[in-house]
Amino acid sequence: MIKIAPSILAADCSELGNAVRAAESWGADMIHFDVMDGHFVPDISFGPNSLAAVKKHTSLPVDVHLMVENPSDWVKPFVDAGADIITFHVEADRHVHRTLQSIKDSGIKAGVVLNPATALNELQYVIDSCDMILLMSVNPGWGGQQFIPAVLDKIRGLKQMVKARGLNPDIEVDGGVNTQTAKQCVEAGANVLVAGSAVFHAIDPASVIASMRRP
Image (cartoon, rainbow, N blue to C red):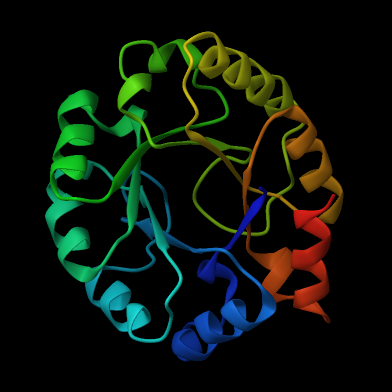
């Protein structure tokens, strides 16, 4: 099943409660919650208090994407705020396996994120611990960027890697996903699509989500 995760980074930040309720009514499968610290990436977005507020307005799982330095410091605050899954960048963490285990020991799902230029071999010794693997199809830091086509080969490579090991984590793609690139991502092996502008800036968001789910 293809799952669509609208990113509330593209929503009206003064109306986040309405935004997540709307996304649920449009047929979203989960909410993507981007956390940026102004250090690992140039922008600043949401914190644990924002997540706790958002959780009051939706029954959907919230997928917290940590684009921060020292992500292990933020596991407990976001678990306590209601995260259902936390993913973090391997480029930002010195002890990736330890952080994965810390998230899973908290009783929620855990995953890692790779930037476009980060090789799949970074996953070699932690892939068994991942419930989700997020491949960035833009360079992280702000929404509205263009999809990087070279990531399609990376999706295919990851799909082959997990199949060879008998694993079945969610393969998520984030960045420049729209009704056109969604089809390419799914054909390459992705099953979770993060879409921000393509959903929240659409005239008919429900139609966009339905199209992405059946690309």
